[in-house]
Length: 447
Ligand code: ADP
Ligand code: MG
Image 1 (cartoon, rainbow, N blue to C red):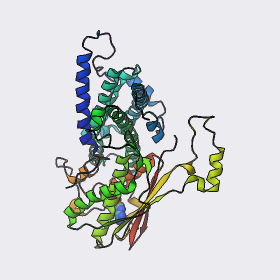
Image 2: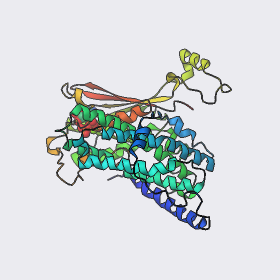
Image 3: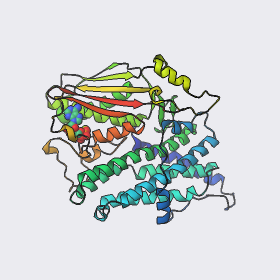
Image 4: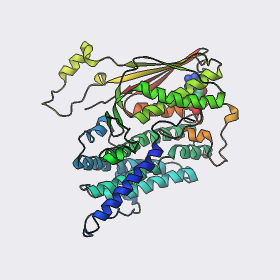
């Protein structure tokens, strides 16, 4: 089976190894430094102080933009840039984690007591308690920065399996909590998680890209990617990601059904935009899986799935937008101009299949987490050890998604990824014929 490109979990192992090597080298190099030097050992975890959690959770979460992430990683990367990235990360994550802890605490007690949900709750407590000691001071030396990056790698690792665990927990609790409440909680939780992971991953990636010997063996930083700033590719080609995802989805489709429909890419395949490759990869994989499944199950495997890529028109070509740009402050007036929405470069990708469309009874449910029409023979058995394909299928961006359909997370989570940076997903069903899905992505909103 083809391996999925840019898989996050396998990266982590590679991240940790070079970091440990560096730590050891630094530990040797600094063994003669007096003990008073800050953090010559990683700060010990502290017990969580409920007042502190409440205080953090009462603070507003900073709305994350791609530009925020890029700003701290502009080449050339210096030690100062890394420190500012680490301090930026530290200014965001504790508040985000505290919000999640409060949201979990607000669930009915019987739900939080479920072993799967309480495992997730404990993961958040662990992560926040590990971060709090770092929050008390700023990161101003390389030793602290390396230790902090290790904490980030641990955080990403700890939370890598959240989605299947939460899905299982909520399915087990469905007697005690309404479907609408579950959807509301999951939607907020998974959207927040997208940003939190990205912030941590971005710092790890920037750290590694500052280490020439690491960037080669780490997939946080794509090999030879001159257009990457951390986990963001400023010249991402959706057509290329589509081909990666197509080959992965084709393999699992052939395994399940014995056939693989073809994918035709047309429109403007050379279009590029600044985005997070792992996010686009997750969304396209899920949308292609749906298109493949519908195509094959309706016996239309000879009809190609069409992927049309369209860049939004160049802003200055439209007189209205040109006028808006003229009204913007000049560079002398501000170093951080905010582009109006209509000027933000973007791409729309239409995925069109001839798989018969979505029935009127099914259509209202497709955005609910856990809604699926996957065959009855595939119904999940949650009494087993949890290693079934469907659980793996929802393991999140970068997860090992080895089932063609599963728990009904593809559309709602795909939309959450797209909306995270101002894009979206719309489904247009022509019942009896096929489905068009419009994926809109926006590039950098601010520079
Ligand atoms: P899953 O694929 O695990 O069932 P999704 O959230 O991806 O979950 O999709 C939910 C449901 O929406 C699917 O089970 C299917 O009934 C319907 N659906 C989604 N995309 C298509 C499509 N292209 N053609 C037909 N039905 C679709
Ligand atoms: Mg799906």
